[in-house]
Image (cartoon, rainbow, N blue to C red; front, side):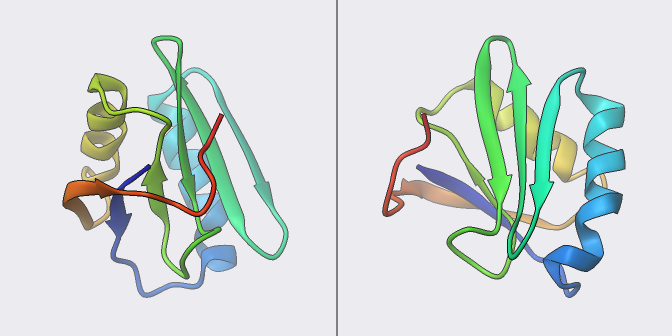
Length: 97
């Protein structure tokens, strides 16, 4: 499910390294990659939150289920970036594991 979207003017590949450094300074375990899309997996309290550009040209915050882990990632992102949380999570074409 998609819970939020970042509002950033930069292209994802221009923002990837900055985001990687920022997220790494706030979370002890992240995985990331950059090819035609940028993606981050943040592992928080045994849960995975994805921040990626797979479904959009802007980073979206995704998780298999709602919870404090999603809210935590959104609140951290808001420390540096404008983030628009959706009033109701949106379904994605495929669900994250």
